[in-house]
Every structure is written in C-alpha cells, then in structure tokens.
Amino acid sequence: MPLRILLLGGGGREAALAWRLSRSARCGHLLLAPGNAGMEAWGQRLPSLNLLDFSGVIQSCAREEVDLVVVGPEQPLVAGLVDALQAEGIPVFGPTRLAAELEGSKAWSKAFMARHGIPTADFRVFTSAMEALAFLEQAPWPVVIKASGLAAGKGVLLPDSPEEARDGVVAMLEGAAFGEAGSTIVLEERLEGPELSVFALCDGERGWILGSARDHKRVGEGDRGPNTGGMGAIAPGPLATPQLLEEVRRTVLEPVLAGMAAEGRPFCGVLFIGLMLTRQGPRVMEFNCRFGDPETQVLMPALDEGLDLADLLYRVAKGEGLPADLPQHPMTDTAVCLVLAAEGYPGPVKTGDEILGLDSLANDRHLQVFLAGAARGDDGRLLSAGGRVLALTARGADTEQARARALAAMSRLRMRGGHYRKDIGA
Ligand code: AMP
Ligand code: GLY
Image 1 (cartoon, rainbow, N blue to C red):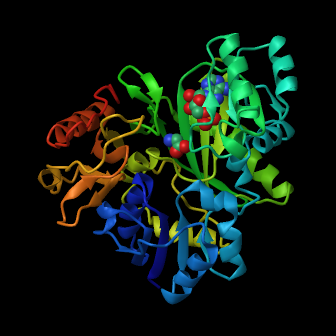
Image 2 (image 1 turned 120 degrees about the vertical axis):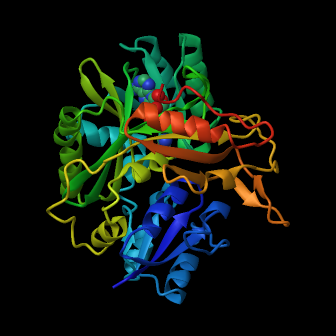
C-alpha cells in the first residue's frame, strides 16, 4: 500500500528527508508542513501549519488521510506531539515526550547516563547560582556550562578562564540568559578529542546504526570563529571505523535502549549520539532525539539507494519493529555538504538577496541542493530568507572526490554576501 506521509519541519534537514522519502518505493504522496521553497518538487506543501498546534496537526492528518507522520525538529517532540498523535491512533515516527527528555533535559539525560553506566563527562546539576559558584571554586576539572533545556543549539558555553565560567553561571541562573531552558544548568568536565555524530533508528527495543557524520560548527575555516548551526558536514564520519561503531553500539546504543525501556520510556525514533572521541574512548556529549542539521543533508544522499526509508519509519511508527535483516553498513557513498550562509551569519543577517545559478547544477546526479533559509519572492525569484540559505551536497567515491565536486558546484552559485567554508572535508 503506498503511504500518504506528512513530514513536519521546513529547514535543510527536512529538505533532505523530503528528497529521500520522495524516492522511497513505499511513499505514495508526500505532504510537507510547512516545508520550504526548495521542497516543492518532492511533495505538496501545507505552508501554514504550526507544528506546536497539536489539534491543527491532528485535523490536517484526518483531512489529508495521512498514514504516517514524520517529525523533523525537536521542539514538537519535547512538547509531546507524538503522544497527542498516538492518542488519536495516527502512526508517527518520533519519540514520545518522556523519551524525548534525552534531548529536552540535559540534567535528566546526564542522570540517566550515570544510572546506566553510559560513558559521558563527569557532571553536576545546579539551579542555585550560589551553589554552582561554590562548586566552581574547587571544581576538579575545567568546566563546560550547559543550559539544561532546549536552547536551539546555543546553550553550551566553553569558558576559557575562571572569570568567564563565573559570568556564564550567573548569566544563566540569575540573568536568565536562556530563559527557562537555563534555569537548571549542567556543569560538566571538558573533554578533548575529535567529535563524531552517530545516528540510529530505534524501535523501542532495538537500534540500528544508519551511519555517522562529522559536522563543522564554527563559521570560519580551520574551525575558527563563532559557533553556528553548522557550516557543513561529511558522511561517513572520518573516524567512524566499523570497530568504533561497534563499540558505540555496545557501550551507548544498547544500554540507552535497555535503560529507557526499563524506565518505562521506550525510545522510538532517531537517536542522535553526539560523541567526543577521547583518549579513554568514546564519550557521549549529548543525545538528540531527531536527525541532525546539517548531518541529514549528507546522511540521506550517502545511504544505500536501495534502502526504503519510508517503509522503515512506517514499521517503527506502527510498532512492528525494525526488520531483522538490515544491512550492517547501509552507508554506501561518501558525501560532503557545504552550507551557503548569508552575509553576517551567525550574527544578524540581511535577507532578500537573489540566489542564482541553481539551474546549472540540476542535472548532475552527484549533486543535491537542499534549501533552508530561502523563499520565493512575488515574482518567483528565489531569495535568501535566513542565515543558512542552502546546503549543497556532493557524493563521491571518497571524501576528496565529493569535496572537489561540492566546491566546483558552489563556485557556480551567486548570492550577494554569501559565504561558505572551503576547508570542509580537506
Ligand atoms: P552539545 O549541544 O552538548 O553537543 O554541545 C555543543 C558543542 O559544545 C559540542 O559539539 C562540543 O563542541 C562542545 N561540547 C559540549 N560538551 C562538551 C564537553 N564536555 N567537553 C568539550 N566540549 C564540549
Ligand atoms: N548538527 C547538530 C544538531 O543538529 O543538533
């Protein structure tokens, strides 16, 4: 039976999911809410649906006879959209509110890891600035300060001095720098090593590693300058050997699934494991309960073409469980993605600049463009509408080839003030 699928979200991650779902044999009709201007070729947009208006989402599902809802971003998951849809009998791919606490509350997530022996940085949780400052006086390690709640990827401070650490604690707990999200903080041991993201599809009991990726968060070349939502990514992650992925499965993925099930919050959906590969072995820095952005923009093109993503997500949503015969290493290609950002990003940006040159890339099967902060003007021209305007992904036999293709393609795009990193994958 071909499925009518509703994909929620409208960024680059959802563009990559829409592209992939539209190529699934199981996908009959794809609805995109709100979607974006670059996704129109892959599905039908419902541009005015608000993802936090649960009854609006439920009504759209009924009206459009939706068989499967796929949730892209974390906010509706943490707010309980999956629970609301399940209560109406609507199959949905994503974790329930309680399971999404793995991402929604860093304080809960760290305590969960401690309870289940999952390797992570040493930590303390505070709600009182006085107690946190007293702890800083004698903290046995250099600290990282994290707002416990959702902060759109901005709630982590890496102080370089004791003064900066004190200022950060006070800003979060007394200055409400991150609002409610920062009213509880985690002080954590600072880890060293390269980072790696691992993605696993989970059905509540079993998890299956789809692949790995490395994202580049700093705006400037050589990983310098302020943090961004991500300036590009590579898949598979350069250090993700089969042995390492096996270690992550054994020491992280399996204990997470067993622990969540034992605590009455079975995890269904995508578990995004953010790791630091330290000298002592892989350590979890964070869990997210959804796909990554921009990691999805490399993960989807690098996955085996024969894999029917819609079918897998549907089985999980229906409670049928993942099939037993999944391939061990489903990533068969290498992909490099470069993000084209607007002038000023990650600070305030100017929008409304025309994006030119996309047509010249359309027929290259190694390339895929995923729009994010872009919209059509009244005259149909494609204009920038956000900080990260688009992600351009190239596939290749190896990173070098994929990177060369991505750079060549990027040099054919034109947008006033647009900038991208040329060192990703080098
Ligand atoms: P998170 O949102 O927890 O992944 O943190 C965002 C970024 O902060 C990570 O990608 C790391 O670069 C950095 N980070 C987080 N936790 C640590 C840690 N314990 N030690 C060093 N860097 C960290
Ligand atoms: N790329 C990091 C994230 O999606 O949270």
